Image (cartoon, rainbow, N blue to C red):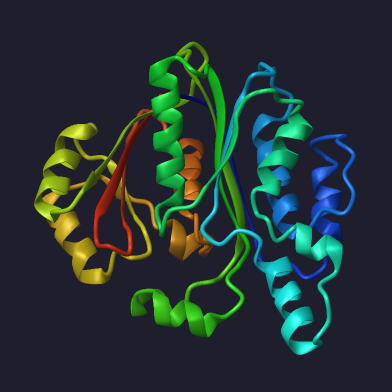
Length: 289
């Protein structure tokens, strides 16, 4: 899959969505009303990526999210269990997180497939795998693949879930996207492969041969300090992309690692190593031109 454009959007947690609306208007004249923060983040990331580019109306949309619409889900639960009332219709409808991919497709006037993907800490990687299969089968020629998540509401929950070495990390809202096609001409790079492994040794052995010598390496949030040190020793790299430390964390932050790599590195290879909650290693390889 050849990468033709990327977007890397992240911001501090937002309470007032008017700023997101104003920013979005810089990239599209799509008229929207009654959209929430999660939908706005999705639209903003996509239109930053595709801005002023020509694309086919059959373009497919693969929206990856770990948590979906946190804000409206919290509102609905508050209305039901704290206020003992029926939820407001707008809030209730927008708890369905897959409405965001519909809004994205509608704003693009896309007639292609539109899919929302969630998969236990590797949602972005799984969405790329689905897109890769569709490209290989000839079902699609163009796709937008992105990771979108609101900032985690509870830092206490975050601390319980993730490695202690990341407990002081900034929690951000994020929407990062790749515009992929089957054509190499004009591309800025490519996603070469994604593989899943149960054993670390197998994952490292594959990573050594999947990219070029001395790749840029990046780690997902479930890769603790000892785990990362093993990888640094066994899979030597020329640079490390610490996107969580520099940008912050949202639950599909692997998407911003990949987009930042293509924005920041030329003529380089990327190895991104992530783990899911079952302990499997999901390794992504890419190459920039």
